[in-house]
Length: 253
Image (spheres, rainbow, N blue to C red):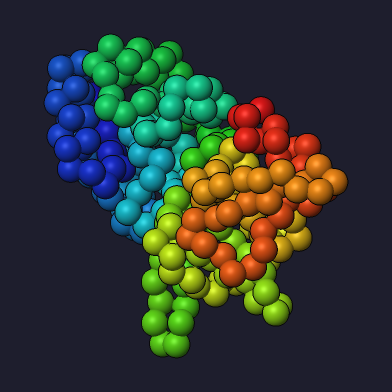
C-alpha cells in the first residue's frame, strides 16, 4: 500500500489526481488532502509522514516550497504546476518529478515508476529547490502591487500597469484605465521586478509597457518622442543612451 498526501487548493485538480491514482496504482490510499502551507505544516507535525506527496507549487497561502523551510520532509515529492514545459526543466532536481497541469495519466504513471525506484527515505535538497523556484519565470517577476491610500489597501495586477514614473520624489503607477497610485518602489527597484519583455525604462523618470505606446516620433540626437496611453502630462522622450536598446526592445530582440 502506498500512502499519499495531496497538497492542492483546486478541487477539480484534487478529483483528477484521486481518479488517476486509482487508475494507475491499485494499492494507494490518500491519507489527506490539504490546500495550504499552514494546514500541511500542522498535519505533518501531528502525523507520520506519508510514502509519497503530490504537491502543487502554488497553494492557497503561498508557494509550497516555503513548507520545506518549516518542516523536515523525508518522503519523495511529485510536484504539479501550471508552468510551461520549458520553464519546468530547471526544477528537475531531487524531487521524483513534476507534472504539468492538467496531469496526464501516462505522465503520472512514469512519475510513480520513478518513485518505486527511489529510496523512500531520500531527503529533498531544499536549498536547490528554493533556488530553482526563485529563478522560474512565473515567480521571477512581480505579479501584483499592494496599494495603500488612507486607511484603504488594494492590489493592482502588474499586467494592468501601463507605466511607472517618478515626480517630486514620489513614485507612481498608472493603470491601463488611467488610475494613478503611489507605490513604495523606485524605478531602480522596479526594473528588477518587471518582465523586460513587457516593460522598458526609457529614461530616468519613466518605465513604460509595450502596450502603453500610442505614437512614436523621431527626435533630436537619435532620440524617440513617445505619446503614451493613458496620456501623460510629462514629456516622455527616450534618452540618447537608451535609444539603441529601446529600438531592439521594440523589435522583440
